[in-house]
Image 1 (cartoon, rainbow, N blue to C red):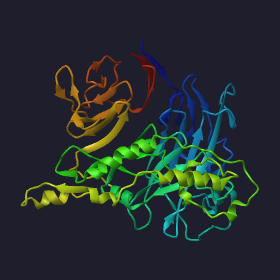
Image 2 (image 1 turned 180 degrees about the vertical axis):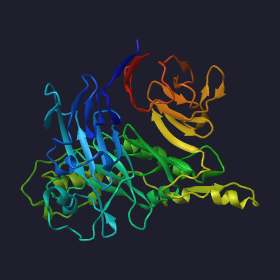
Image 3 (image 1 turned 60 degrees about the vertical axis):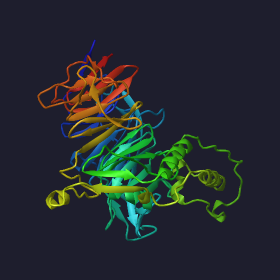
Length: 459
């Protein structure tokens, strides 16, 4: 039977599996669903940057896919990470003094200096909490404010806008022990020539599924395997439209297959016993940003770098830049110059004429929400159809999890559930105006977080 748990009156900013980031009577905090207990985790934090954060300063917030960790982004570029699936850390006490919750938290920023995004923590970002007087390595550092973010268990992918440049993605590793300013790389800007080709397509939406970053652009779907130390964008053209991308070489298909196979081979960490050699005397074998795969600065740093260096030797590569393998075309009549101009797209904003809306993935494949049909990709794009009526599904919104696809056809309708073959499912009534923050799934048990509370059911 469906079970609906009404939470205490508050405004939810993001919803996790067992708790939510909320604003209650003007106070930021954590609300535990099971007991309706409120924890003032911001006011009681030992980091001055956290307890000075206000609800008005928050511009982004999200949980990871497991619903156990969340991140917020403030209008000053501060990233605050909270992790609750831990045994040791700061023990917070509930407002009623009857419960406790353990968490670890961390603050980070993305800093641009001397024409690049810094790879490691620097004094400029730590001066806010430690009053560091000097900024190393540059006095011209600029803190970039992320305007999009997805969160995994150990890292976040943020999108920022460096000065006089297109936007770019930065992998931010928040579970690494880098607070001693020892130069351990925890930020990796994806700014290669191939990534610039992706940014030139104009990013519309990004999501994360099992360590694979999915990007939707005006012309293609991009997959990024984040297990790689230097991720390569994999390109899949979208269903054909007035603006479409075509592949002009089979060499790319061979690379695509080989690279996916490579990414699924785990790193073989065979490290020697730490020695007393001074690591600083050993020349680094790989670029520092590749070290984001580490969680702490190891004693045998040279050996770790050697492992990454050897692994990179076996990574498949393309003979030419990614852009040479694809053609982008705009199909309009020669006399319709107004339409042609309207179809141009930019790096940071969608175009009104663009039909693509968002991508969401599950174990079976990837769903593409458009202003027309709902598409599904396994080996090619096909329209997702209602199996009973054999008609395409025209959805205004979608939510995809492993066991079902929720679609909202119109504002006057309730959410409809389908399995991944197009069979309509019997689900509890979810009104169209329900502001859904997340759905978590565990062995056919579903937990839906919306503005009113937690809705649980099983199939």
